[in-house]
Image 1 (cartoon, rainbow, N blue to C red):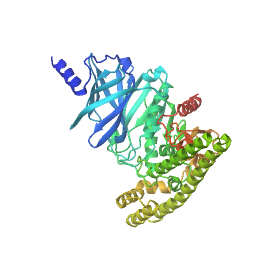
Image 2 (image 1 turned 60 degrees about the vertical axis):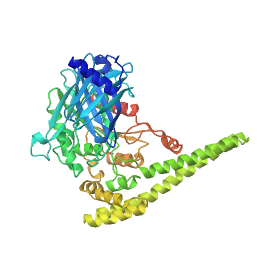
Image 3 (image 1 turned 180 degrees about the vertical axis):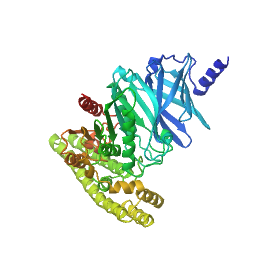
Amino acid sequence: MKRIINLLAILLLCGSPLWADILTNEQLLGQWAGVLPVPGGSRQVTILISQQADGAPTARLRIDAQRLDNSLMRVRTSADSITFVAEQAGCRFAALAVAEGQRLRGTWQQPGFRTVLVLDRVAGTTPLPAAATTFATEEVQVSSPSSPNPELGLGGVLRRPTGTGPFPAVLLLPDVVPANSVEAGSYRLLDNLTDYLLSQGLAVLRLDDRGTGRSLALPAATASAELAADAQSALNFLRSRPGIDPMRVGVVGHGEGANVALLAATQAPAPAFVVALAAAGVSGQELLARQTSLVNRPGEPDTAQWAWQTFCAQRMALARREAKQQMAAGANPAQVQVRIAQEQLRLTTEARKRNEILYKRQFALLEIIRQTTDNAQAQAIVANMLRQIYPRLASATAQARARQLTSPWYRSLLAFNPQAELAKVSCPTLLLHGAADVLVPAATNLTALEKGFKGNKLADSQQLDGVTHDFETALGERALLAGTTSPTTTSAEALEAVGEWVAKRLK
């Protein structure tokens, strides 16, 4: 009777029909996503359900806006409901399958909060072999040179294919952003890389960021050297694990995580291979000065750039309307097309001029930080310069951003020059960039990296057209001028490029 009452309570709360669908464990497999309403806003929730070696379902939870990534969930199924429990995150989701098994609808609970959550099945954007759904999962703890207590080191999850092995393995390093910021793109990329590399027969280690999740006891890093030491510890950890081939342990890093991977590769013992996704080849000061979103906190939308793109879209829409009117009046079609092309060229040229002016101003601002060791003095100057560059910027926002730009992490980044270490990397290395990356442009960074690796005969470089910094498919400059937006889908070409290159190195 108690079970029936509980079921009725879920049905009444969710407004679900009494004929909810019954799903088998196999039918649950896949990705489910939805929006969790919370006080003052909402959060994007994703649950990825996979199959353990014994056939039982397991899941991992990601909540983008909280940077909760890959938190393990226990899955309990019964004849009438499905329950997910994330003990590490302190939350649970009790649901029913509805809409012919394409939707999970139920109650989300966490301390002091309870609400209705609806998750829809997400169609796979990158086809994976069936083997990708069968793997063993283990929560692990890795000692960190920064922690005197091994039990308070780096926590994470090791996934590997079923079987005895020994398997090749890879450590994944995300793009590094300061604590308490939101940056989901790198984690979405590494989620897809995890699944893809598992399907290729590799074990994959993911560690929680310092100060978050299972690595909560460690303070945030203040320099890349600390993260490189952590990466070396993680590689040594993998080499010592039963079922892992110690001679075939590599590292894949994205963004600043890619530069951390390259730094780790300069130390002995070197990894079997390195894949550097969107690594910086120029100095930190040059890299930041080239970015149009220096005023934004990491993860915040680039409002200035978005306003410019909106302006461009309006100009192009007007040009197309005028072209239609001219065509209707009998104008020469070739001349009309020339008119549209000229408008695109004008906007592109104007954008480049704007960016060059912004670069010079921001480089000067960062030079002030680099040369002014007194933080209070530097912050006052920087806040004033930010207000000059962005006249509409609120004073409080300018001051907050000035404090962040003068933090130990940013000061370390400004002083960082990857060229000094690249020649020390002797292991096989893949340098992969997206041609549509506006944060770490390939035109300057990939060229600089290739120069630094000219003495390494085992290094390869590749640039993918129409791919962004997070290796998601983009529509290109003309599409942006037309006002269209880029979908957030990891490029299948990028996954295949990584997988094929790693497979060749492992042979």
